Length: 311
Image 1: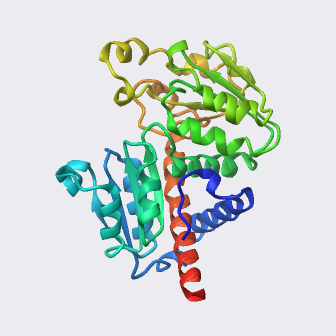
Image 2: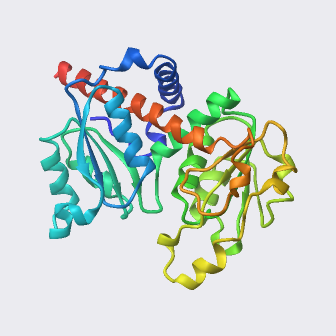
């Protein structure tokens, strides 16, 4: 059975098909209003979420399907000690597809190994966030027209930011993509991403401390928040949370066609004064997340039905 644990689970060609489907859904919503009629999506969220959980639920409802699930571990049998493996085996009898977020890396993969339905990794600790990556790719593809020949700045928490890690892994498959990593020393990119993903694939990248010095070079700026929940002590979080703040003054240094993305939620790393800049596309990006999740749900359910019919 086909699951989505990582953006690399789909080939470049499959991603192109998925993005084309998402664009068709965006342009012709009525065409897909009953695509998942009679189907149920389970949202199993062991960790708080607004955009990811609600966008999955919005996606299924817009496809004519139904939803069930839980929004925190405390409101599920995990509070009683039930394992992820047992939970998914039960839910496989209740729903047709599952989106799972979990604070432990690899938990959705454990679920997928035991599941009778497609499982989508909706974020596992600081590891992967593949549907956010699909959202990012669709946003870039739709607004730039391509995913190659880009200089991309990633700024903020590059150590714990699963959105950053997933996006890098996905983009290294496209030609002539260059990365500029902007972070304080304490939040630099993990060694395994630098060594096993970038250097292994001969990808050009530089690491800097100051955002201002690289703004004129960027086609895209991907901002991230410093995540309080990933820190072991409050002192380190407070010291680093305001290290980068994107404001109008910094935006004046950027190209007229540069785009600013952010996986959200933001705290204060992007000043609200930037919101009206046409290059700020993070709220549009959040909306694209619904379309790509609609496309993903339709695709995985179709694959499951095809598999069942061939048995």
